[in-house]
Amino acid sequence: MYYLKGDIITDGQRFANKTIGISNGKVFYVGEDEPIDVRNLYITKGVICPGFVDIHVHGVSGDDFMDSAAAFDKIAERLPRYGVTSFLATSRTADLSDLEDFLLHAERFERKPSYASLLGVHVEGPWISPACPGAQKSSLIRRLTAEDAHRIILPHSNIISLITIAPEEVEDPEVLHQLCSHGIRLSAGHTNASLEDVRLAVKHGLRQITHTFNAMSPVHHRSPGTAAAALIFEELMCEIIPDGLHVHPEMIGFLYKVKGREKMMLISDCTGYNNLEDGEYFLRGKHLVKEGNSLRLKDGPLAGSAITMDRGVKYAVEHCGVSLEDAVYMAGKSPLKAIGKDAVKGSIKEGFDADLVVLDEELRVEMTIAGGEIVYKNG
Image (cartoon, rainbow, N blue to C red):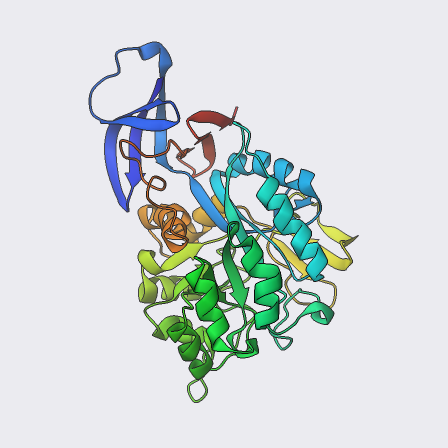
C-alpha cells in the first residue's frame, strides 16, 4: 500500500492537490485526506494522469512485435518509460504464415509485473489497398475474403481487438459484419475508398480511421474520400500521429475541433526506430532514412513514426491547440473506449486499475505505475 499526492487529471478534468491510495493493483482512495503512513507517500509538483494506451504501436527501441515472441517481452518492458501502461501489439503487412506466428506469440504472451499490459493486437494489413501502401510491402497486400476471415482472423478473435482494412478491397461487406459480431473493431486505413465505400462499411460495422489523413484518399470538394469521411461520419473515431510530420499541427487542431476528445485518439505508430541515430539503415528488408523524428523509405514515403506516446502528448499540447486535459484523455480514455476496455481502466477512480503516469512540469514522464507496480522512475 502506498500513496501519491498532487494534481490529477482524469476524465478530461483537472483536480488540485489530491491524494491517491494504491493497493493490490487498484486505486482504493481518491480524495483530500492526508495518508496515515507518510513513509509510503510520493509527492509530485507535476500532474498524475491515467496511463497512456497506445493502440497502434509496432515496436520501440529497436524491436518490432513481428520479430519474435521475445520481442513482445522487450517492448512491453520498455513502453512504461514512455508513460504507456497498456497497448495493442500492431502487425504489418506480411505473409499470412508470419501473421499467424505473430498472433500465436500474442496469445501466448504472459505479462510480468514490470511490463505494460497487452490488451490485444491491431492487425494492420495485409487487407489494405495497393493504391495506398505507405511503407507496407505491396507484393503482400491482398483483398479481404471470407476465406481469409475464417482461416486467419476468426480462429484468433480472442486476441484480435482491431483490424485495419481498406473498405473498397473487401470481397463482401457481410464479412465486415461477421468480424464485428466476434467483437473485432474495424478501422479504415491504407485505403483509396470513396465516401460511399466508407458509408457502406459504416453500415456493416466500421467505426474507426487508422492514422487519419495518412495513406488514404483525401478531402476533395468534388470527390470526397476516406479523409473526408473521417470528418463527416460521427460514428468514426480517428487515430492521429501527433509528430508534426505525418500531419500538419493545424490539421491536427482542426480534427480536434471537428471530432472532439471523445472521437479522437493519439497514437505513436512507432516502428521501433525511435532510438536510432540520424542516418541510413537497411532493416527488415527496407532501406530507411532517419532524421530527427522523421523516418522514411529512401525513395520518400514516411515509414511509420519515430515518436513515443509521451512525446505525442507533449506535441499535441504545445503545437496543436489541445488542452493537456484533453490530450491525456485522447491518449488513454478514448483508445480504451474504442476497444471496449474502459470498464476498469483509463480513469483515476476507486476500484479502477492503478495504471498511472506522473508527468513533470515539462510534460516529461516522471513515473509510471502499471498494475499498481512502480515500473519506471526517472532519476
